[in-house]
Every structure is written in structure tokens, then in C-alpha cells.
Image (cartoon, rainbow, N blue to C red; front, side, top):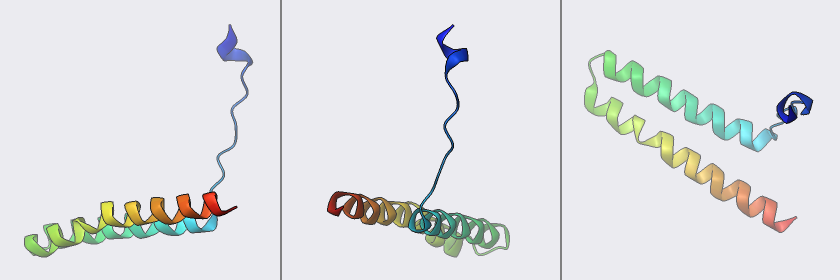
Length: 68
């Protein structure tokens, strides 16, 4: 079959992409920690950072790719 002949391609991430991914993950961890620590409002607030960080990363990386 065609699926068995295809070799898996390695996944490579640039340093800026890794930075945005780590920032989003740390924001998520902080949000969950605040939520279960009793500060639910602060946990929700910090949780809203995750999509904002990922959106900013997409914007920055897209503009970076277009300028090359």
C-alpha cells in the first residue's frame, strides 16, 4: 500500500517557535495551578494568555517567513 512506502518526516522547530510553545505551556501550567490553588479568577485571567501567546507567535512567525 502507499501508506507503508511513505517514510515519516522528522519534525523540526525553530527557536522562536519553541519559545512561543514553551511560553504558552507555562501559562497553561500557571493557570491550572492558580485555579486549583483557590485563585479561580486569577487562574481564568492567566488562562486567557495561552491563546494570546499562540496568536502572537503565529503572527510573528508568519511575518518572519514572508520576509525571507
